[in-house]
Amino acid sequence: MAAWALIAISSLAFAGLCFSAWNGALGLAAIGLLFTAAATWYGGHALLRRAGVEPRLRDRLSLLGKLAFTAGGMMALLRHRIKVELPIEGEATEGMVTITKLVDGQEVLHQVVYLPIYDAISSYVTQVDPSTFLLWAIVAMAVKFLGVIASAFGWNLLLRGQGVRYPFWSKIMTAFLIGRFIGTFLPSTLGLDGYTLYEAGKYSNQWARVITAKGLEKFIGVTGLFLGMLLTLPFGYQVIVDVTTTAGRPDAAPLLAGLIAGVAGSISIVIVLGLIWPSIIVFFVGIAERILYATVGHLGI
Image (cartoon, rainbow, N blue to C red; front, side, top):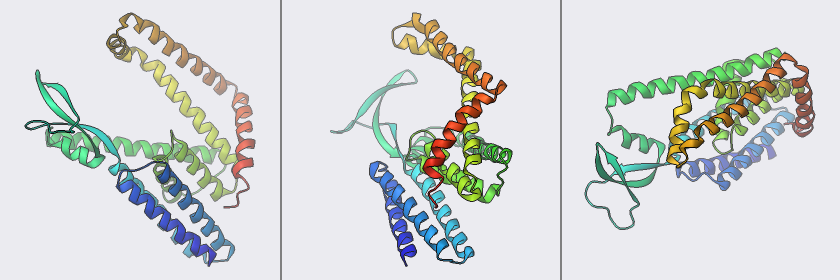
């Protein structure tokens, strides 16, 4: 009975979270609802397992929860409010926030509003050629989708390298989608990294190997980030010039570019040394292993 009560509480908390997301109000209250929903859901699931409930029923509940998290995440992203500047037909009314923009050499008054993303897209579509928008929207979605699959497959390869194997589409991909949903409420990639780490550790019960794989994943990610920054710096130098000119310091462009190159280059050198002498990576990953395993390794959920 206690297990089903926890699952009911989780469902109510998740419904409240979705209501907040629909209204575009994702703040501390939403984070509280998210953690309440997650904790009570996994607590109830653990009690069902201990009570000897049929595995097929528990698997169906898990699938239902994952589908709900995925659908909720998509809705939260589409309902997230962003700043939009819309041209005003006629005169501005009292209380309206406006700015003046140059359009084809003429000053046009625009209203500043905050709209859900799908409303912002629909208002923007009327200002561009529909075929052009649809073409590049599809290309952008395809690139993003392929990027998510590539990231998930990379995580899969790292796990295999540590001897941890589990289904790609039904487990790893769903874990990535759920982690991205959780990440809409948390800074950086904390939600994605935390959930994929938890899911893999829970499934395999080999926390040390999973934590090692996660450490390597972040190490490789930093490698790509700073090497990419260093290699593309010459192509983006004009952007630095434009920024410093706008700030009234055009002479600072070479100094700023040199600073970026120095930071990115130094970190890249450290990373390359770590790849040449893996014992450096092993040392730091070992420290992370002990800290994280002491934190999550004995939760029993």
